[in-house]
Length: 434
Image (cartoon, rainbow, N blue to C red; front, side):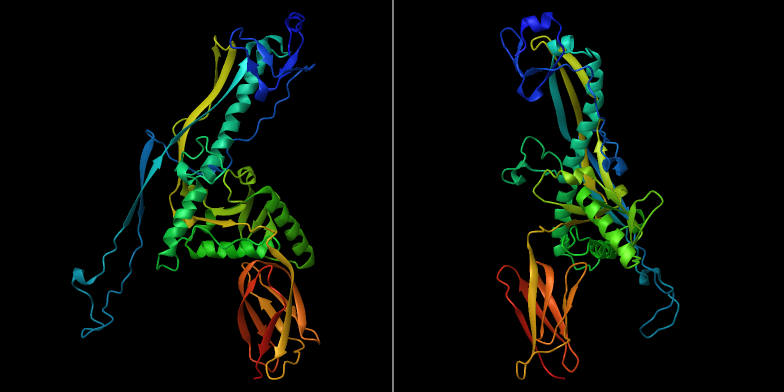
């Protein structure tokens, strides 16, 4: 507690913001203040929202904004008929030619309003060593911090509080769509689409215990298949994934001379021609999605702020304190679904350390030496070769159901769908002589 004598002696002190208690009668700060001979407050200015600054900015005229996309896929046709009685004759009637019809898509961005505020006691400013200069420092770091929080909401937000996971944040965070919520909707649409190149929303889970670079390369292939604009896309990862990718790349570079990746002039990792970008927002997910990877062309994601985040302070007489707040509204939405693809990183705990295989001759159950065993996994398969006893072990197999391919000289190849979990024992596969 800070006494009146302390104030008269003009002793410098600092505040514990989360425990401040202002007496409603005297308006004096009676708790949450601790002594400290601070000569200066050191501040660190965090970078503003990294990803949203790269997205397409939509100038919103109000809390709701309609945006329309025009898509055209031309239908080229030969000027000669290719079938029928007049095969080879030039088309003369315009009605015989298929019309190219443009596609019009409409989307509505609905901006959510957000605020952040803090109370700075007047006594704190009076007796602190930096006095009023503290407010300038505080305001300078509040707005960038609010922008980073907005980026988290833009990634993970839910448009309906009822969708919030049990035990999750419910303090107004779920006021706007998030990019990952949009991917959920795209994935649902993909499940009913007959187009083999339809946007998928989510790719297969990334197995953290297998080689990562081939899995990311495979994800890029899926991104290209759904017609994603690969030339403008980046691979967005959290700091842990970035470190693991760099470690793996360094090892593959020295051991295998791999060509799947390279490091550019700024020492950024580039996989299949696309730069890997580490995003702080992926390190601190607001929802229970866990770790994720995102391949996206940021220009295909609309970010519509109604106003930029700017911190302002005003003196509140009743509180005898300065209230510093940041108020702004924004919305986010995926414009072109094919330009965004997400992947969840599987829990590294759901992995079998080792799986034993026994490959036998179906005619007499004798062991087959030298049989090749391959488990088809997302991104990179795992292989093994049997020894004299017909057995082999394959390590770090993630939970799930995968095809196991077995081949051996003198026997027909065989593929068996196998479930891998805690109940998995020795996998016995019998081959028939060819």
